[in-house]
Image 1: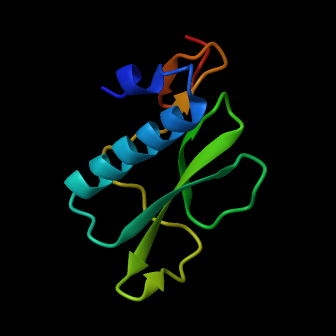
Image 2: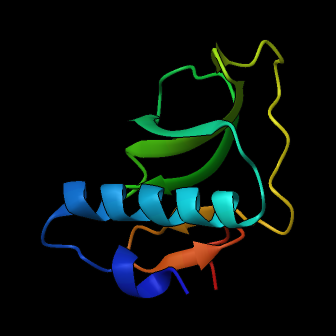
Length: 102
């Protein structure tokens, strides 16, 4: 489902943004009302749950629940129901579940 959009290798910034938007859509479709999905450097410390990676692993996509006023105070955001980690592998393919060795 996410593989087509994530294969845009010519413009890795757009690929990251597209992948982030698709993850955001899936979380919203699962009924989560207040949340944020952000893209940060892979080495950066970020609150929330890492739900994907892009730009050949140099960026990670982070999900965090929020209340009406901002990010939650919990240290671990709950995983959206049925969501798997989406990872862009070094060869440019996308893996659901984070395993690029397939």
